[in-house]
Image (cartoon, rainbow, N blue to C red; front, side, top):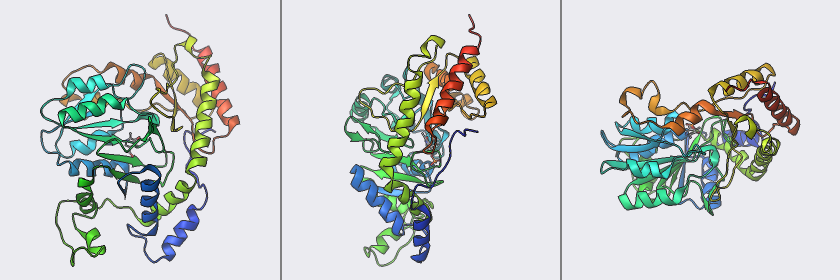
Length: 380
Ligand SMILES: *Cc1c(COP(=O)(O)O)cnc(C)c1O
């Protein structure tokens, strides 16, 4: 059996969890949470980082920090995870879904340009598969219209746009350490604050709306309820697990990239004749080996492939269903067609990619894909 994903221990996870317990404090903002913050700020130059219980929660913090209210428009890609949109829907925002590029699931800047209106409060971009969106025109548009830019960098740890780390381009950005991501903690996330004006309120919102953080720094002599907020800070046990992974970031990334490259090299001259496209890495982007996918010719081919792989005990999976046509949003959508997002919904197939996937397993997946694709009758 080759699973789609497998969580793993990489080194000192269990040692650090024991240390956290021995320190006498495993609630939020303990020793390992601080180590994680220091790691991210030093390695990527982020102005301020705060560990959160998930990327979803970090996105909800973004919506609170930007004071998103009933009727404010937020432009979100249609091809993304529910949380990217849901965080703003919770605040009553009017979601405006933008289409992907033709040959890349990332949002098309020209689509954003068409959708910006005087009511637009924020643009959220998602760096799909850890590959940077075309940021220059998006940054220009947001600056020109005075609109906040948020990066949902859930999949984009240790990946770059030109020489700038992803997560450093928006006023606020978010990462995920869910077990399906590159570095993991089970559930967990990070809020990155690049615009320093948000730091104080972010600390308050994360601590149930209290100024507890400034109290512990001795800046105020008692703490109280100063804002609306929630409980967005994770236990130090989560950060202890994550910190052990961060210590091995380079090893993890290089193995994932090697698997990605192995898939790519296997398929590069062999799949175009079946109408299958491989992922492209634009010249402005790096690849962080988060995901390897194929874009099938059509839904029928993808369904047949998933079935054929399953028969060989290989778990390959499709990904997002366009949010503009989701059961929750369909009635609210303005009726615009988003054909590229729909095509990726129907045709994108993700192959197993995790740290412990062996070269032999990777080769079996490749052979199974090629064998299956050759045996599927070619319609028309
Ligand atoms: C994984 C993911 C999320 C959600 O992350 P959680 O940490 O599970 O909340 C949000 N957006 C994108 C693009 C993701 O891939």
